[in-house]
Image 1 (cartoon, rainbow, N blue to C red):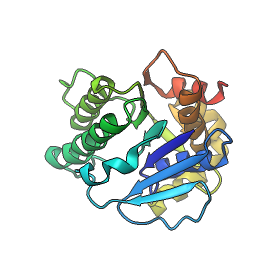
Image 2: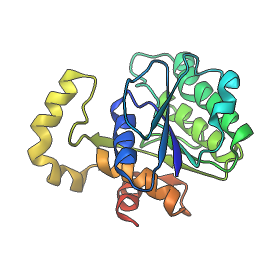
Image 3: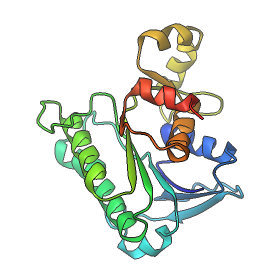
Image 4: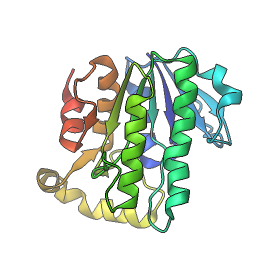
Length: 221
C-alpha cells in the first residue's frame, strides 16, 4: 500500500515512519513536511510544503494513496486556544479537505490523545480541540478513519525526543517499563507504527482507539 505521513520530524511521526519503512505491506511513503528531512530511502518521496493551512496548490500530488497517518501536532503547554486550534484543527481540516477531494477512498489515521473530549464542551482546552478535530475527521467523508488516543509513548531503538530532558527520563525509566506498562496507558513506538499499519490491513469496527485498543491492534494480524 501507499501511505502519507505528516509529523515525521517528531518522535511519534518518526515512530510510524520507521515501521512503514520496515513493513513489507507498505510500498511507498509520501512525507509531507515544511522542510526536507533529507532521508534517502527507496520507499520515500518528499513533499515540502511550508503552508499547512492550505493544500490547494499541491492537491494533485495527494492522489492514489491508501492511507494518511497524520502525526503532526504540538503540546498545548503555554499555547493559547486560538493558536492551538489553528495548528490542531484548522491545519488538519485543510489536509483532510484536500484528501477527500482527490482520494475519498483513503483511510485517515489521526494522532489524538488520551482524554480527548468528543462532546467539545469540557473545561480542558486541548481536549475540546482534539475532540472537535476527531469529530470532523469522522464525518468529513473518508472511506474510513481512526482516532488514535495515544497516552504515553515509550521510544524504542533509534527513536528520540527533541527534548533532551525527556530522553534522560526515558533512559532512567527503561528498567521499570514492564511494570509501568501494566498500570499506565503506555504504547511503544513500534506498537504505534504497527497498529497504524494494521488498521489499514484489517479494518476495525471501533473508530476511536484508546491505549489498550492501540496495543491490541499492534499484535493483530
